[in-house]
Image 1: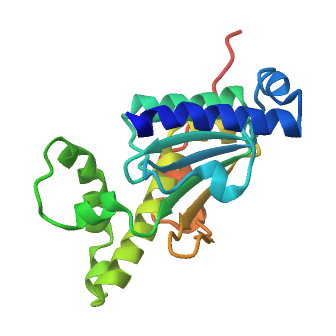
Image 2 (image 1 turned 30 degrees about the vertical axis):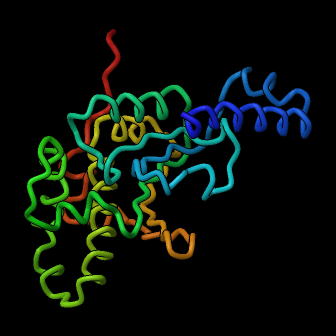
Amino acid sequence: MNSYHKLFENNRQWVKKKLTEDPKYFEKLSAGQQPKFLWIGCSDSRVQATDITGVEPGEMFVHRNVANLVVNNDINLLSVVQYAVEVLKVEHVIVCGHYGCGGVKAAMGDQDFGLINTWLLNIKDVFRLHQEELDAISDEDLKFKRAVELNVLEQVYNLCKTSIIQKAWNNGAKLHIHGWVYDLRDGIIKDLKADVQKMPQKPKEIYSLKPEVEAV
């Protein structure tokens, strides 16, 4: 229980520190949020979106799940994306994975993990799509790293396929989608420079939606 109660003490110390820096900190924070970024990241406790990017509370909307997946029937994620894009009007959506991801590592093997097997199938599909490239990498560490990167790129692609993003682009939204990987070993973020237009079966061709026609 000591570690549990420590969280409350940490909270009190944090509040004290913030009020010392700015007596109106919480007053301003409670007034509302206007984030410019949506972060879709991994649930790994070592990867804290606001810490590694240096932004303050209210500057980044965050969704996290195992291995930073964008699954087209995940109502939780889709609700976050819709709210961020249509209500908060974020300008950048970032899918960020990390080297050493346990979800990706688990999906690379054949061990039975129980319930999470269903979730890991989404990552195994990434391996299937890029099997030739991954099979050509003999070094297991390099293969693992490349699998993490390919998973991020496929999730960027999945995100761009959603009707939420397609509609936003149709409506002229200045919305940018990014694929990043965070390295736990040195703390540096790598921009994968995901270019949707260079991906096979570009979302704008096969998944695009015509603008809604207003009723007369």
